Image 1: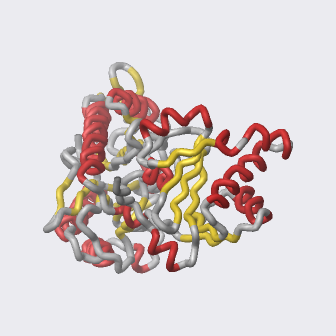
Image 2: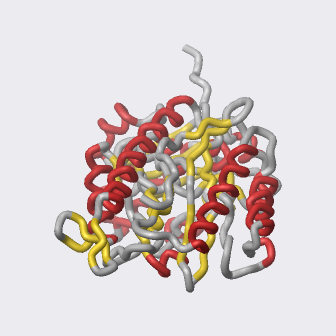
Image 3: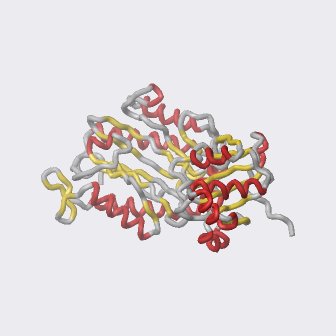
Length: 391
């Protein structure tokens, strides 16, 4: 029977560095670990890819059955296969015994030179060095693979973005349906707070099998801090930046969306900021297609803002447009490609955000963010939520 081809083959990378194996140790919160194994576990486990493309998954004995059923890796080894319990008794330290087990598996395959990711656990590396192995830390060889999504990954992200869309609609409706009482927003008889809106977002996402951490519901002048999560009562006549980036609890893929809304009367300055952000976003989205450099999209956003009298990061400003235009989204919320001052070209299969914003501490912030899939000849906007400032 012929051996099935490894779709994640990095043998050329290993050969170029004269390495025998690429080794990852971690749990499923590590995006490369989940990508290579498709195995979900909260406890640490190990993935090896040998220089000939052979893959090995090393788990605890308790996880063997589930790993054989769920993982994409054909070869499953357990710590007990290497006499882990006996090694613990001999070494008196489970962590050292774990390293001994890894060493035994590596030695069986003639490994001496080990390539690892840059965030590889220090103790394991040091212990294996003492056992005669050499190491080289590499930039992730899987990051570029992860940047190009297949049809299954795209379908998953679309599902998560639909959940995000519903959560955003519910959040904006809470603001739109509120009453203004003494300058504050009042929702169903209670002060409307960032915390109350965030609770509604979390509950909506859970209904779709999704979760989100650090959701931003930032009102007033504090919204000029792009990553301030927001707290307290939402005030009338002030911008509210809502940034939701949920992840599927099962599939582990993220989505991303930002809207800025205001209940009450907008000042001319805030309205001009909103219209300028919208114009910059529309100009950037229109450019998205394979072969376009990320820097070209980013510089177009800067151009739009500067033509309208706003400062940008291109000039080193600390107010106005002060961050990159976007980023890739997948198993990490921020991954390749980064849509900023980079000459990297977009490729079909990329999923990216386009999220220009303007931030002034004495006024507040405005940001709009859509999620786009780069097709063979253009793009597909995965974001359904409409854009309306005053609600």
